Length: 482
Image (cartoon, rainbow, N blue to C red; front, side, top):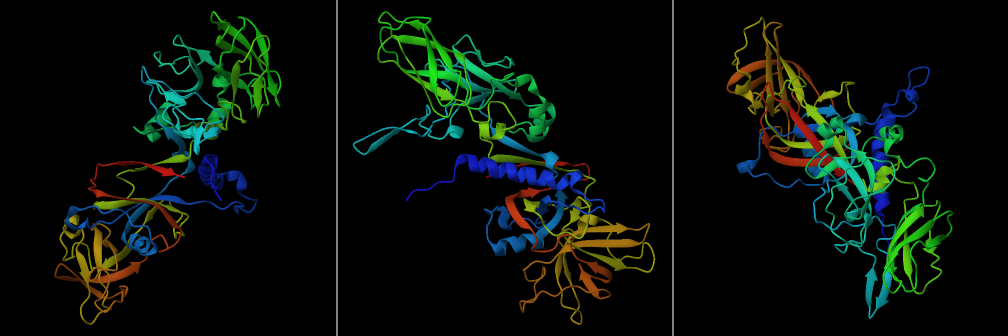
């Protein structure tokens, strides 16, 4: 028995994910007492692992529970990603002269014939059998997106489309294009990459009617292209044929024929509406075979555009400003965590443990004034102490207010969290610790602002260590594929 999950299901999953994040932020879902009737969905970018990779070799991420808990132990900071920083994206299929583009079809992958155990399918020009894999749309040099409705009998495209007319239009090379949308400047800056371009927000598509087919011919199941599979004989130019099926109103006209009366060019003069199956009633000649191409059931360039264009990927944008966190240490892992339990309402969370140190008066710390001196330095306790160990991520001395803070991690590594007996004790308030041969006293110890193991890590990117600087901003664009 054969089974599949459909390509459209992948788009539905992506859209549901994006809309769920937005829904959790919507103020209308707060009752009179200030309680949310729809729970917020937390989506955070995290950065982790300050101590670099052994021998500088970046390993492939590991997807199992052990690796996930290791990441929790290595987390440095997290920043929330709001729905405004999420867009549906599609591959950046740049228009190129003298390329044969696929037409939009409703039936890629349908069986044409079977003979001698060989099955022939309706395919794209590169034998693709799924619509979203074909080159049925292009992205121009002006970042306008066009859907190909007719490719002039598989001829090369020589004219880059540029018109933003609402109706499908024909270029001088015979291609018929439908303008879909333009990538706006804000989305371009946040979400565009060499490989993908963003689709406008649904609300933008709804409000921007300049590219809609108006007023009533944009119902689903309209027919804007008819493919000549066989021209037949004895037909005459200007003959008109009805499109028959379960829709209404469709009609085509013969534009030209050859000397035998074989149809060489045809035009849709009324796209009709509501077709799920159709054929052309070719009266007046013999043996012509004309195949209607049925538009999406949602119509074209509508709020259903993610389904129309195959947007089963989401781009997440997050910018780490230099003022977001005090940390100046490197990090070698970036990822996304979904719906963790947090102990702070801030959109910026501390992922490390934290301790403050006791000193009688400002300036009496035996530690060096340079913060970087202690990056990745080990923390230990005297033999009479708790036996806890850890690794410093960042040391922050505030000599004005006499507050000395250490951000640190405890991992399952001997000397950096783990004892030789396999236990991992915690530091305790008031105990002495040793940092680079200096002994200081803990005032208070606090846990990370994310509960270890909560939520789901849904994306992991191991990379060469990223060095942070005081005037540096990191701009992340992450693609999630469903």
